[in-house]
Length: 218
Image (cartoon, rainbow, N blue to C red):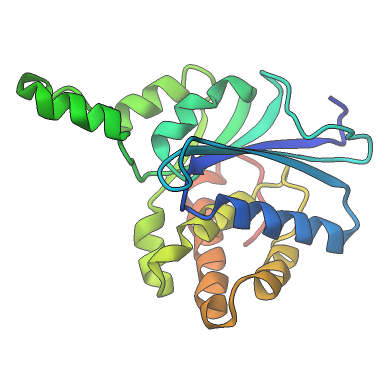
């Protein structure tokens, strides 16, 4: 991987708007004159199935696929999914994840059948964070549902997390370009809430994360 390349693995579950995020970032890159290639992989179901998107930015990029252990960042719209794709992150890479946990149906079914597992069968956020920190100390969980509510639309969790990513100095796409892309891509009736979500996500990350990681002002 060359020094002027940026690789981001985006993950979540179906229905969270991950493909829209990829479109927003791709459009922003095009407007800024940055070469970007993406590739997406869906799970078995459109909703609640796992989904991931490889996104690479750089003049010499020829494939969207991020080699294992070389991703600069992991952006996760659901906390458990960050564990599924952690192998793509390089040592010391950056993880920005939604604190929302959506337990798989198979896991819930097992616990319902075996009542004795109710108290210990589910992964909690603390355990997820402990495991992620075995790979990198740069882990930030964002309470995207709460921030999306503050923005006025609970469906803007995805843009909240993108806003958090946008303040990172290493992320080559300016927040202003992302805002222009949001204005262009999201439906008109949701535009204001999404722009607010982008701004609030950036503010939350800057206040909580940027004493440790190089950032730009939101």
